[in-house]
Length: 196
Length: 204
Image 1: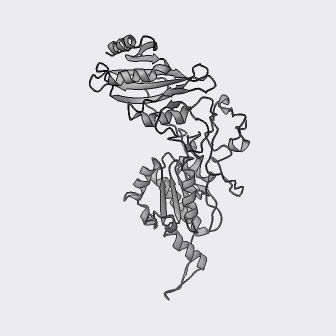
Image 2: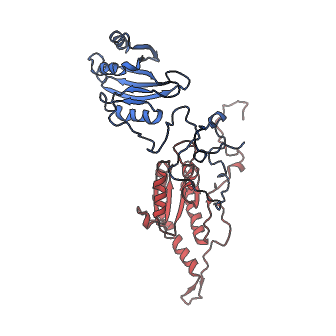
Image 3: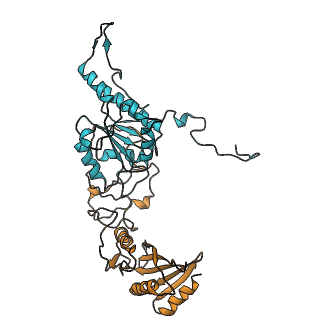
């Protein structure tokens, strides 16, 4: 999972011993409620949208994290998923959607294009949505695996709980550089070939 | 297959055909730009040609040639089954004077294709019913697929934020794009553009 430094991610709830009450801080309780009831606005512009659909459907199912209901009005949403390439022509729309959302609000960049522009290094494309709006979690990948997106969602939930609004990146679960093959795929070789 | 068609065009317009060639069996005719419309009308209306379908119309930029732009139309006959590639060369080497007659009144599909060619290359199609940008936004200046449009020149509609409090971690460093970058000769920036609109050249 992505890096998360700072205070504990656990909600401090001290359950009274069998007395049917619990004590906590109001902020922690509010954050706990927020992180399990994310209303999301999917701003889907490109091919990552297919992966978004896969992730929202039953096999990966992000509704089990409480991010169940998509809201197609930014007024009702508090998590903006930016899924796909943002062109210069779309940038004013994205900025306006973000500004219409009510606080507290979070932004998740889904995929490499939303995170950094990806390989679109040209006159058409915004090199990452953070050029226009603040972004809290970056999920790299072209497109990202659903597991990476779920990691990103859980990372965001941890950040909501701990009140950390700094940007963070979802890291690969295994570092490819530490694999024996350095992450390179070994293609098949002919038998008797001197190249291993 | 379409050789007979090429011969027919050459017989009909002996003074308009600049050159012909066939690449992998695709017959090509380069015509004088002033006669572009005449040849198109003939190909559309003549029963022997009967080119009912305009498959593609675009432009090519050859920056050091004069005429600089090549307009390319791909035609197909639904009844005869033959194809023809029609070209014409327009424009001075500095990019001005790129004008050619529209064929949007002959083939409706040419409407958007000519708008795209105008948007990307700045070729004016005279007589076009609605010649305005189709892909880029109206505020965009210049024509991005021209070879002299600097590859790193962007024209954002929304001002980019400058937030020093956001401490980005690798891989999102100063260079947001590809680490392997572009070739140095692509780093040219038009001299008359204000600095704010231009990406700084990559530090080396």
